[in-house]
Length: 248
Image 1 (cartoon, helix red, strand yellow):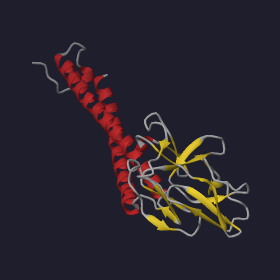
Image 2: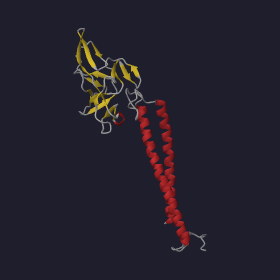
Image 3: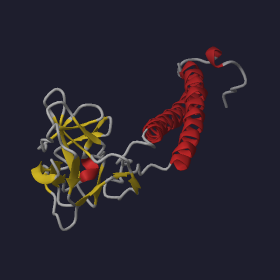
Image 4: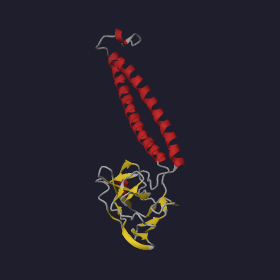
C-alpha cells in the first residue's frame, strides 16, 4: 500500500493517494462554494432589509407614509392646524403633477394654495385636478366627498373638487421619494375611489405607519447579521484558496 506520509508534491502524478486527496479537496471546495453562495444571498437579503428599515425610520414623521407591505393599513389621524391639511380615511390617494409634468400619488395631504390659487404640496407638486382658491377667500371648507368651497365676502361658493384614486394592488406602487408613489403594471391603473369607502377629513393629517422602535431594532439586527455573514464569506474564500492550492 502506498504511503501518504510524505509531501504530496513528492508523489507521482498517477498516485492513488494523490487522486484521493484531490477528490476530497474537490468535494470540500464544492461545500465551501455553496457556503459562500448562501452567505452572499443572506447578505443581500439583510442589505434590502436594512435599507427598508432605514427608509421607514427616515419617514417616521412623514404624513401618510406607508412601510412596504402596509399600503392598505390606515395610519392614525392627527389634528392639524391648516385648513388645507387633509387626511384620507380609507383607501385612496391624492393625485399630483410633478415639476417634470409626470403623475404621482400620495397620502400626504399637507397642502397650501400657490399664487394661482391651485393646491400644491409642501415640495411643490400640484394637486390634480385642483380647485382654484380665490385670492380673497376668507375661509375654505372641504367636504368629506372632496367638494371644496371658499367664503368670499361672507358667502360660500364652490371652487372645485378634490378627487381620490385607488389601485387594485397598492403595495406594488413604486416609491419616488418625498412620500410620492408611481403607478406600475403590478399596481394596476388608478381608478376613482369609492366615496362609500374613502373620505377626506379636513383639519387632519394621517400619521406615518412606521414603527420607530421596531425599525431601529431591525437596523441594529440586520447590520449585525450582515457583518457576521460577511465574516463567513471572507473565511470561506480563504479556505477556498487554500484548497485550490492543495488540489492544483
